[in-house]
Length: 337
Image (cartoon, rainbow, N blue to C red):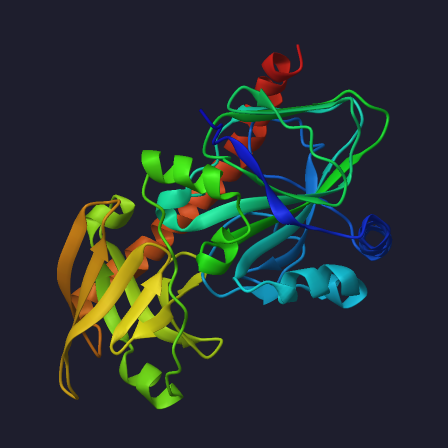
């Protein structure tokens, strides 16, 4: 049986150029600690592309509206690689793990075949004494190679070498062009175990049409675990969902007439005129199929609920930040013992 923990893809990259751009990035930008309680803060990153276009934001969250950070203006080979793919790179990061350091066992949520996202690595600096495991199997990836890893499974790293291990990590929207880079036998094995969600290509939509799609609605409880007051807006010339209280607008890809998609969620306008709009939200992985009215204005009650939701998110973020730092400190005892 073929392992589905990892697969080497068909491309290879120039190690000298990779390391040259890495030097430029390090010269001009400071890396920031990665989110998570399973390391001591020494695992850091520099963002090359993300939803905010901010190099200090190394959170791996795909918002469907990727922007280059200023780092790529110093790194032409990295930009050539990212722009040269026939699939969307939603998040791109340089990740650094210093000598002697560990990243404890964990799983990455939302990065799997069913959601339409794949995490790909290009090792830039590595060493035979870097012990990297995915689903119990050791990943011995060489510099300049192109590798997929199933990071929805348990994985960990222990850098026992005397160098800082650096990978270029890309979160990519799965489409047929990306799948063509995988070994056929590997994909056959994947398809025998799970459904692969394939993102559709965008179609051209006028700005006037996008503006006519805007309005207020409530994202159903089944989607986030609570009813979220939201708005359809134009963001970076793209229809996007703004969830009140969250800093990121989630971009929607137009894939057919009156249909927009964000990964495995489909928004279809089932009733559409100048006076009223209704969308069907369809997400098979969440077993969600629901018609929702889009309103042009907010009622007084909805405005109050919107303000309450924003205040709740701010409170959660304020409480969570020191808690995560405290949790990281205590978990270090177990992770590094």
